[in-house]
Length: 284
Image (cartoon, rainbow, N blue to C red; front, side, top):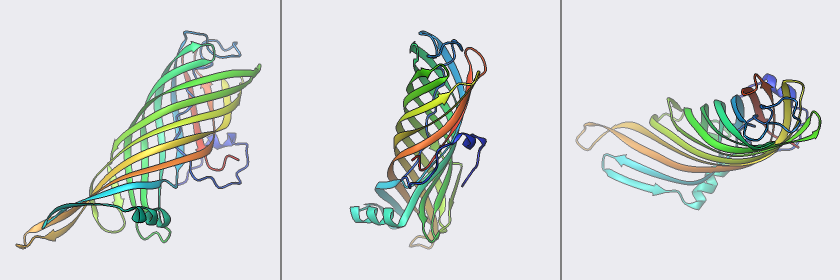
């Protein structure tokens, strides 16, 4: 799924190299200019800030790390763990990616001028795709309304009166159960859930224009995702009674990426700022 948002107007760098992945990023908490708009170094020590936010991101080329299949068949229960060769074959022949739209709220506190910490909570509309083949003969897509939460630290430094450098680091968790799952190979998926944890470090530059601060930069992230999907096929047992053969796929996938991003913040009041951003591939 591809989207074009007005936020991409802020992307000034050219896109030329092939980066292995990009990721759902936790945004700059943007409390750094809340307390005093005339202060070039951002908020004063002890200031509180609130930041509603929106972000779009896309993460591809996740790697399967492990997978265990559990079977509930008419003849009994069993399980099977993928070998290293089977994991390598999946990574060579199938793709794993996701797209998300995240909206939430950050509440933060300035430890000192320019240095703040924050906690955040949001809802992430999360589209997770696995078993994506080059021939598009098999894929599983799940739509998750994911509860997303985490914590972050940010530092803002004035290089010139209206030119800022920003450093941001965060850790983010998501927990979700699917409301829609589609498997184009024919099996019926009856249950799906997902957990993830992400950490990232960002570096950006921004130019303040009164209440408006556009910024752009790059970052590095690692993500660990644990999806569990259960599917079934209608059959009959040895006595001819209706029965469902059921398989649960318990997977662990991982990805890392150097990515670019661009966005803006808009100061609504002394306490409240709105911001939005998007990540993109090929930051160099």
